[in-house]
Length: 124
Length: 312
Image (cartoon, rainbow over all chains, first blue to last red; front, top):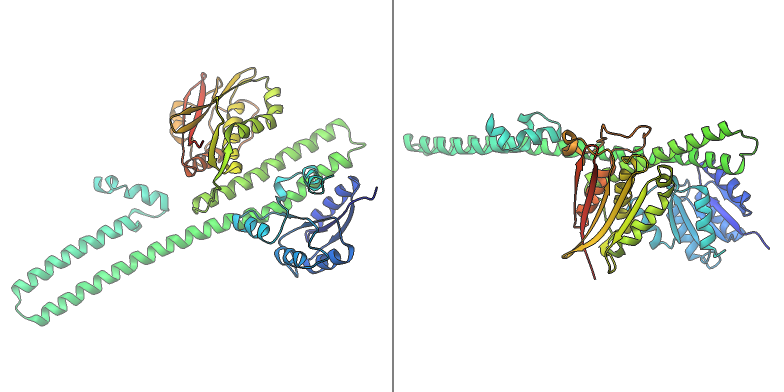
């Protein structure tokens, strides 16, 4: 069985490392990017099964990345889980308007709960 | 100075953090007084002096005075609004900034315990669990502070969905079951026969309910009994939770819904809680169209209740 591929777009190195390592231990294949532009390029090149996207990112912020992902034929079907520490209702609304599948606040979610969300989004 | 107290100027001064002479109410009163004096003076001047130019000069002086005072009042109010906005913005920014290192700590520890924990002895794991719990508390405090900042700015937006209050209470009780079991508490549930539907925000009301239930658990002694009731009362649904725990001292009861209030009667070993829970819960319930109240007697127990308009 092929392992599911997950793209992590997160600019905070320590968060990205913990997330990637935990996901790999859970038998996911993980690729990662530290900024929005690189993340977009990787999504188009590698076609992951799911994308974990931060909002505050250098070069292109999460909303721009989300919008472009949903506009491109190659990437618009990939489910995107927004993983962020912003929590304003305006932020949440904007996220869903731009096509996010789920919106999770990092400091309120354990890694194992994020994995549960990923598995339920991918219907595993 | 009884007038000052009667008009709640003192309370306003306290709330806004300025001296009595700087409160908008006082300044408006002063402006009103000056207007009356000015009009009276103008009347007498016009009666005693037949000269229209003196009248005009007097009028100009009055107008200039009133505009000057009015301007000071407006500037004072603008300044206070600005400072208030800065304080709330600071809370927003600081809270968001705090969340990044907090998430990093929480995830590193989770990774350590769950995936790198081999070779750690029991005491080391205990330390890690402790750090994890405390960091979790910090994360909750940041969430609470953000909620409070939104409430203070009047920006707490609540959804209006048809939700099942029983389902919410049931789920929260299940997540709190470790604490219930560790204290050997007996939880009894009584609900209304029909569906307990209300119009509200499931997440935020869940927060309010979680706060009331976890308070009842925290302030109960071991082997205590907790009774949760949801019943229909006319057009409202009433949720109540009764414990036979330590109760709230009468002298502290009027401060219960204040920010950062923690009762002195905390059961030993309890260090959890931010003191913001009830302030947030009260605001959520009231903004959802309901009321919240409580009854308590020291060493006998406490009953917290809230009502919300029911829907069919």
